[in-house]
Amino acid sequence: MKKYLILMLLGCSLLWLGGCSDEMAVAKGEPEKAEVIQTKIEVPVIKDFLQKFDFEQRKESKTHVVLHFTSNAALNPEDPYVYEDIRGIFKEYDVSPHYMIDRNGVIYYMLPENRVARHAGKGDLEGYPEYKDHLNDFSIGIELMAIGTEAEMQSIIPSEDYKKIPQEHIGYTEAQYKSLNLLIDDILARNPKIKRNRTHIIGHDEYATGRKTDPGSLFDWGRIIQ
Image (cartoon, rainbow, N blue to C red):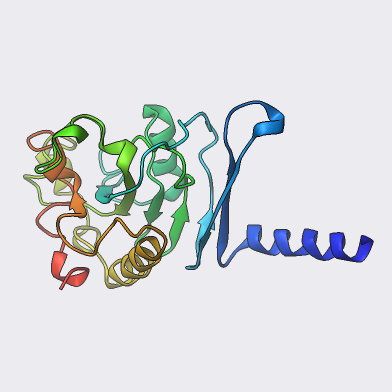
């Protein structure tokens, strides 16, 4: 028995340090009635849960993936992709994705899927009137470190600062598309109500039209949906 417990502890340590990751959370309620919810994430991720872990337990089935772009271009246009800076923005504004993919394709696992992330906000989704202002309840949010066109970034950064952004920081990278495809494959394998099509995998701009522009015109939807 003692040997078995040691092996279990070693296994948990390895999962935490890197590679594939287990998602586990305990539902709120009386201690003796707490429900352990666990799913397996099969792609390599860096687990870095946001510290303010008071996100609502998900009650609805997941039916959508919402894609976003994010950066720190407003404060640091010449070096807009420092992970700690972007994570700090999430904390400051009390928003969150479930995942974030950096320029090199590294996937950061920031919130368990069985929690309702604050990523979509208010909006409407065609064909889903019941989702008005409640898409968070039904969706998984993925942020990609990327910057859109000057017009798409107008509400975030003035033109004079946009021109300071190095060209290689604008748009998306090959590594990001590769990792995004792997992550979507994994999400779909665990969530049968989400299909690999433009009905179930959408941009933030499709839900919050006129308020948001991400992932923007530089995102190539043909790279993830044939």
